[in-house]
Length: 209
Image (cartoon, rainbow, N blue to C red):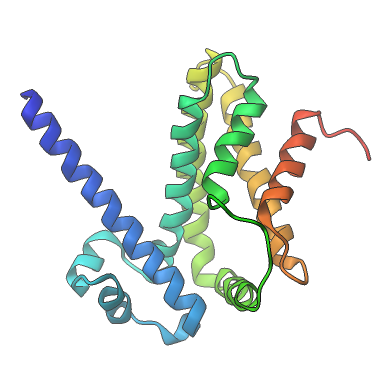
């Protein structure tokens, strides 16, 4: 395969990834705004400006499309971790990588009526039983890639050492705890401080308060 062929394949894969993200985000937005039962595949395809057939080429269901955003975000965490300075302490690198993907740039943490409506809709969507199985599968795929990134950074072997898989599981659990804490807060709490607290505590070894 020539360099031109490699470039063409890379562009095609990037386009596929961008389409997956666009479909996933359209599904999430519509389900939060309208409610799970009030969104069809046809609605999602129209919102993303693609055909229903295109949606079906990427996802078998609304649930799979929604879970894809979680997987994509955790894959970006792994990618970000690979670019952190080699001399940076591991848990500092992890905290920076997670913050970069979970907290929108320029987010002030201020709450608004829209935040409350969005949070309420997100809570309802995440409670859908149909979504749970897909989230489990997305978590498994995300942890595998996170473990690979951890192994590369620490010089461990993901097939022989428990450490990279353990750290990957802690990253997933810690991120989920921070998100759930913010979703349950009334009024909605900003995510950035919660993530900082969670990863600071983990890095400190979870001392008893």
